[in-house]
Image (tube, rainbow, N blue to C red; front, side, top):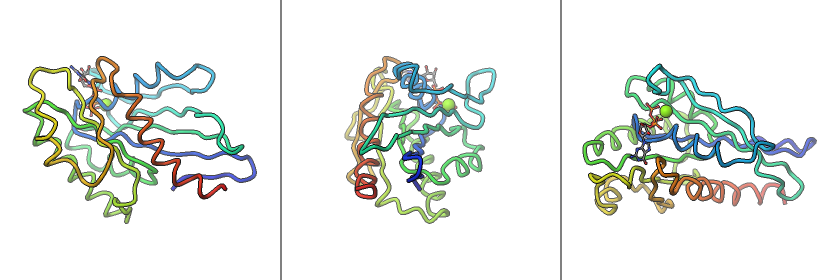
Length: 196
Ligand SMILES: Nc1nc2c(ncn2[C@@H]2O[C@H](COP(=O)(O)OP(=O)(O)OP(=O)(O)O)[C@@H](O)[C@H]2O)c(=O)[nH]1
Ligand SMILES: [Mg+2]
Protein backbone atom coordinates (compact mmCIF):
# COMPACT_ATOMS: atom_id res chain seq x y z
CA UNK A 1 0.00 0.00 0.00
CA UNK A 2 2.73 2.47 -0.95
CA UNK A 3 1.59 6.05 -0.98
CA UNK A 4 2.50 7.87 -4.16
CA UNK A 5 1.76 11.57 -4.24
CA UNK A 6 1.98 12.57 -7.88
CA UNK A 7 1.61 16.30 -7.22
CA UNK A 8 4.34 16.64 -4.56
CA UNK A 9 6.35 13.88 -6.22
CA UNK A 10 6.78 11.90 -3.02
CA UNK A 11 6.60 8.16 -2.42
CA UNK A 12 6.19 6.70 1.05
CA UNK A 13 6.85 3.11 2.01
CA UNK A 14 6.18 1.24 5.22
CA UNK A 15 8.58 -1.54 6.22
CA UNK A 16 7.82 -3.63 9.30
CA UNK A 17 10.46 -5.50 11.29
CA UNK A 18 8.70 -8.55 12.70
CA UNK A 19 9.86 -11.46 14.82
CA UNK A 20 9.84 -12.98 18.29
CA UNK A 21 10.64 -11.16 21.53
CA UNK A 22 14.27 -10.10 21.97
CA UNK A 23 15.30 -11.23 18.48
CA UNK A 24 16.91 -7.84 17.79
CA UNK A 25 14.26 -5.88 15.88
CA UNK A 26 14.75 -2.66 17.80
CA UNK A 27 18.53 -3.01 17.60
CA UNK A 28 18.28 -3.32 13.79
CA UNK A 29 16.38 -0.04 13.66
CA UNK A 30 18.81 1.68 16.01
CA UNK A 31 21.77 0.50 13.95
CA UNK A 32 20.17 1.83 10.76
CA UNK A 33 19.23 5.06 12.48
CA UNK A 34 22.82 5.64 13.53
CA UNK A 35 24.05 5.14 9.98
CA UNK A 36 21.61 7.43 8.19
CA UNK A 37 22.82 10.99 7.62
CA UNK A 38 21.28 13.53 10.00
CA UNK A 39 19.87 15.61 7.18
CA UNK A 40 17.77 12.79 5.79
CA UNK A 41 16.21 11.35 8.94
CA UNK A 42 13.68 12.29 11.58
CA UNK A 43 13.69 11.26 15.22
CA UNK A 44 13.59 7.60 16.26
CA UNK A 45 10.46 7.15 18.33
CA UNK A 46 10.47 4.19 20.72
CA UNK A 47 7.66 3.29 23.07
CA UNK A 48 9.31 0.87 25.45
CA UNK A 49 9.27 -0.46 28.98
CA UNK A 50 11.94 0.37 31.58
CA UNK A 51 13.78 -2.77 30.51
CA UNK A 52 13.85 -1.76 26.85
CA UNK A 53 11.16 -4.12 25.59
CA UNK A 54 9.11 -2.58 22.80
CA UNK A 55 5.66 -1.71 24.08
CA UNK A 56 3.95 -0.64 20.91
CA UNK A 57 6.41 0.19 18.17
CA UNK A 58 9.70 1.78 17.23
CA UNK A 59 9.49 4.10 14.28
CA UNK A 60 11.50 6.44 12.12
CA UNK A 61 11.24 7.77 8.60
CA UNK A 62 14.18 8.53 6.39
CA UNK A 63 14.67 9.70 2.89
CA UNK A 64 16.43 7.49 0.39
CA UNK A 65 16.92 10.27 -2.12
CA UNK A 66 15.29 10.66 -5.51
CA UNK A 67 14.14 8.07 -8.00
CA UNK A 68 12.92 9.35 -11.37
CA UNK A 69 12.27 12.77 -9.80
CA UNK A 70 10.32 11.36 -6.85
CA UNK A 71 11.47 11.77 -3.23
CA UNK A 72 11.46 8.26 -1.73
CA UNK A 73 10.76 7.93 1.99
CA UNK A 74 10.97 4.77 4.04
CA UNK A 75 9.04 4.46 7.28
CA UNK A 76 10.56 1.72 9.41
CA UNK A 77 8.55 0.09 12.18
CA UNK A 78 9.28 -2.71 14.60
CA UNK A 79 6.60 -4.72 16.37
CA UNK A 80 6.61 -5.72 20.05
CA UNK A 81 7.68 -9.37 20.14
CA UNK A 82 6.23 -10.36 23.49
CA UNK A 83 3.59 -12.96 22.78
CA UNK A 84 0.63 -11.16 24.39
CA UNK A 85 0.97 -8.05 22.18
CA UNK A 86 -0.55 -9.82 19.20
CA UNK A 87 -3.22 -7.15 18.57
CA UNK A 88 -0.55 -4.42 18.48
CA UNK A 89 1.43 -6.47 15.97
CA UNK A 90 -1.64 -6.78 13.80
CA UNK A 91 -2.26 -3.03 13.85
CA UNK A 92 1.33 -2.25 12.95
CA UNK A 93 1.24 -4.65 9.99
CA UNK A 94 -1.63 -2.74 8.43
CA UNK A 95 -0.75 -1.32 5.04
CA UNK A 96 2.80 -2.61 5.08
CA UNK A 97 4.81 -2.55 1.85
CA UNK A 98 7.37 -5.06 3.04
CA UNK A 99 8.40 -7.20 5.99
CA UNK A 100 11.73 -8.16 7.47
CA UNK A 101 11.39 -11.19 9.73
CA UNK A 102 14.16 -11.01 12.34
CA UNK A 103 14.67 -14.59 13.53
CA UNK A 104 16.71 -15.39 16.64
CA UNK A 105 19.41 -17.96 15.88
CA UNK A 106 19.71 -19.17 19.46
CA UNK A 107 18.75 -22.79 19.93
CA UNK A 108 16.28 -22.12 22.72
CA UNK A 109 14.41 -19.54 20.59
CA UNK A 110 13.72 -21.93 17.76
CA UNK A 111 10.08 -22.53 18.74
CA UNK A 112 9.55 -18.82 19.39
CA UNK A 113 10.53 -18.05 15.79
CA UNK A 114 8.03 -20.54 14.43
CA UNK A 115 5.27 -19.37 16.72
CA UNK A 116 5.80 -15.73 15.74
CA UNK A 117 5.88 -16.51 12.05
CA UNK A 118 2.48 -18.13 12.41
CA UNK A 119 1.18 -15.05 14.27
CA UNK A 120 2.42 -12.88 11.36
CA UNK A 121 0.95 -15.13 8.65
CA UNK A 122 -2.43 -15.20 10.42
CA UNK A 123 -2.52 -11.41 10.51
CA UNK A 124 -1.56 -11.08 6.85
CA UNK A 125 -4.40 -13.43 5.94
CA UNK A 126 -6.84 -11.40 8.02
CA UNK A 127 -5.81 -8.30 6.04
CA UNK A 128 -6.00 -10.20 2.73
CA UNK A 129 -2.35 -9.38 2.06
CA UNK A 130 -0.93 -11.81 -0.47
CA UNK A 131 2.29 -13.08 1.10
CA UNK A 132 3.46 -14.60 -2.18
CA UNK A 133 3.81 -11.20 -3.80
CA UNK A 134 4.76 -9.22 -0.67
CA UNK A 135 8.39 -8.01 -0.53
CA UNK A 136 9.85 -10.12 2.26
CA UNK A 137 13.32 -10.77 3.71
CA UNK A 138 14.37 -13.32 6.31
CA UNK A 139 17.14 -12.17 8.62
CA UNK A 140 18.91 -14.76 10.77
CA UNK A 141 20.13 -12.60 13.63
CA UNK A 142 22.49 -13.26 16.56
CA UNK A 143 24.89 -15.28 14.39
CA UNK A 144 27.66 -14.14 16.75
CA UNK A 145 26.38 -16.28 19.64
CA UNK A 146 27.98 -19.68 20.34
CA UNK A 147 24.64 -21.51 20.54
CA UNK A 148 23.44 -20.26 17.14
CA UNK A 149 21.76 -23.06 15.20
CA UNK A 150 23.22 -24.04 11.81
CA UNK A 151 21.74 -21.91 9.01
CA UNK A 152 20.31 -24.89 7.13
CA UNK A 153 18.49 -26.18 10.19
CA UNK A 154 16.81 -22.79 10.56
CA UNK A 155 15.93 -22.43 6.89
CA UNK A 156 14.27 -25.82 6.80
CA UNK A 157 11.53 -24.50 9.09
CA UNK A 158 11.57 -20.75 8.53
CA UNK A 159 12.05 -20.22 4.82
CA UNK A 160 8.70 -19.48 3.19
CA UNK A 161 9.44 -18.76 -0.46
CA UNK A 162 12.46 -17.64 -2.46
CA UNK A 163 13.04 -14.70 -0.12
CA UNK A 164 16.53 -13.27 0.40
CA UNK A 165 18.14 -14.66 3.57
CA UNK A 166 20.63 -12.46 5.42
CA UNK A 167 22.85 -13.66 8.26
CA UNK A 168 23.31 -10.90 10.79
CA UNK A 169 24.54 -9.72 14.12
CA UNK A 170 22.69 -6.53 14.96
CA UNK A 171 24.90 -6.31 18.05
CA UNK A 172 27.99 -6.00 15.85
CA UNK A 173 26.18 -4.06 13.16
CA UNK A 174 26.69 -6.90 10.66
CA UNK A 175 24.06 -7.73 8.06
CA UNK A 176 21.80 -4.86 9.12
CA UNK A 177 22.32 -2.58 6.14
CA UNK A 178 22.39 -5.59 3.80
CA UNK A 179 18.95 -6.54 5.11
CA UNK A 180 17.59 -3.03 4.55
CA UNK A 181 19.06 -2.98 1.04
CA UNK A 182 17.49 -6.36 0.22
CA UNK A 183 13.98 -5.30 1.30
CA UNK A 184 14.28 -1.87 -0.37
CA UNK A 185 15.34 -3.49 -3.61
CA UNK A 186 12.29 -5.77 -3.64
CA UNK A 187 9.99 -2.83 -2.92
CA UNK A 188 11.57 -0.57 -5.52
CA UNK A 189 11.18 -3.12 -8.30
CA UNK A 190 7.40 -2.85 -7.89
CA UNK A 191 7.28 0.93 -7.72
CA UNK A 192 9.52 1.74 -10.66
CA UNK A 193 6.88 0.24 -12.90
CA UNK A 194 4.19 2.50 -11.42
CA UNK A 195 6.02 5.80 -11.97
CA UNK A 196 7.56 5.11 -15.35
N1 LIG B 1 24.69 -11.19 20.91
C1 LIG B 1 23.73 -10.54 20.27
N2 LIG B 1 22.79 -9.87 20.96
C2 LIG B 1 21.82 -9.23 20.25
C3 LIG B 1 21.79 -9.23 18.84
N3 LIG B 1 20.72 -8.50 18.44
C4 LIG B 1 20.12 -8.08 19.57
N4 LIG B 1 20.78 -8.50 20.66
C5 LIG B 1 20.42 -8.24 22.07
O1 LIG B 1 19.17 -8.84 22.34
C6 LIG B 1 18.41 -8.01 23.23
C7 LIG B 1 17.08 -7.66 22.62
O2 LIG B 1 17.26 -6.80 21.52
P1 LIG B 1 16.08 -5.87 20.98
O3 LIG B 1 16.52 -5.24 19.73
O4 LIG B 1 15.58 -4.99 22.07
O5 LIG B 1 14.97 -6.99 20.68
P2 LIG B 1 13.49 -6.80 20.14
O6 LIG B 1 13.33 -7.82 19.07
O7 LIG B 1 13.23 -5.40 19.76
O8 LIG B 1 12.61 -7.22 21.41
P3 LIG B 1 11.05 -6.83 21.71
O9 LIG B 1 10.92 -5.37 21.54
O10 LIG B 1 10.77 -7.25 23.11
O11 LIG B 1 10.24 -7.60 20.74
C8 LIG B 1 19.29 -6.79 23.54
O12 LIG B 1 19.96 -6.99 24.73
C9 LIG B 1 20.24 -6.76 22.35
O13 LIG B 1 21.46 -6.14 22.68
C10 LIG B 1 22.83 -9.94 18.13
O14 LIG B 1 22.89 -9.99 16.91
N5 LIG B 1 23.76 -10.57 18.90
MG1 LIG C 1 11.82 -4.06 20.31
